[in-house]
Length: 509
Image (cartoon, rainbow, N blue to C red; front, side):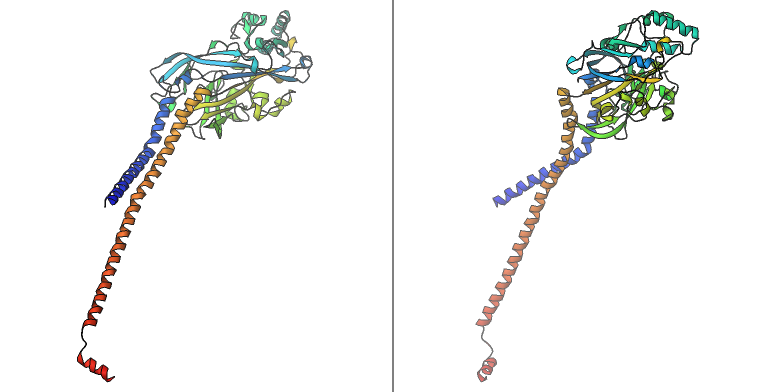
């Protein structure tokens, strides 16, 4: 009797545990997704208490800029009307450091900041040094020639005389460091004196001179603390809600984020839009595939073929014109009217005629396509590689002797790739708190529900088996009593004397 009581108690405990697990699992299924969502939203908004704030304030992972120059092999032939030939030099690799300064939280759910940038040359990662000499088109000469192309001939001849006096030529031989960070050029002083306010710098000229050890213009973005629907979206840049470089309202719009974080809970239908001050425009990347980075699920976004398409191929880009062939964007309106063009490296994804006009170019997707791998739940980049090319449109201009007989061509100057990937302690913390823990909770809720269901079956099975035993015992007892009664009746019949007539009848027989 005592053993049976203990068994019943154990079965009751198992049943209660199963019920508790099942209820807990069901509650988690109903509650955990919303809890995870709340935690993600809490930790991705621009708030000093959020997990991602330090990451937003200062990029915690190594970020590099690799620069490749297109050295002109045959400058004299080009001046005589020959086809340009270039040789790729590099990479010249720089470690890029970025951190936000003057961070100010505003009353309208926005935060304003500047971003300080500095670059350190990495000789161990580079193929060459900053003292290497490279032959390139003289951007300042070509810019000056373009500026006076439609001016009176007398002015063009005066510019030719000035360029000759200053010793300026169509091609220059400068070091990598000079081209990158600036060199003294008397033409800069000449332009500033006789054509004031035409160039945004004084003294030195360098393609990246304005970017090193300098602060960006003021960005104002939404924090998401009050309105999650606009988290990380740019409200203003330089105090402007749109720029004035282009010829349509759509092209002048400042859309997307500042290019470092995006809204959480992305889907394959999401796009990746950001405003790039260097390109003077907003850019939109599109979903390409589901991928994985260091065990973290990601969405890969790439540039659509229409990103730099001209207005003929893609009418919404008409506002960026005047255009040449499709696949390159004229950025002269935001680069002191120099005939500069932006594209993918080696004219990848552009009209093939552009690469055919310059010998030495070999566009391919593996080396020249850009991509961003984003964690879709948080909108935080895990791995990125942004590659862009800067080219100069050169041609002979009547009256400008320095331009000789140059045939019209878009000549690549350089291309650069900015790359970075989350790693180390930052990656570990991100994985543990925003990937592993939600995954454990996701599976735990179903494990608890299944375990609870299994434990609840134990008392049910026990009860069914107990009832079967009782039925068999009751049936066996009932059958035994009936046999007993039959045997007793038979014994009594044997002991009872038969009637007299029956005995005589038997005797006669």
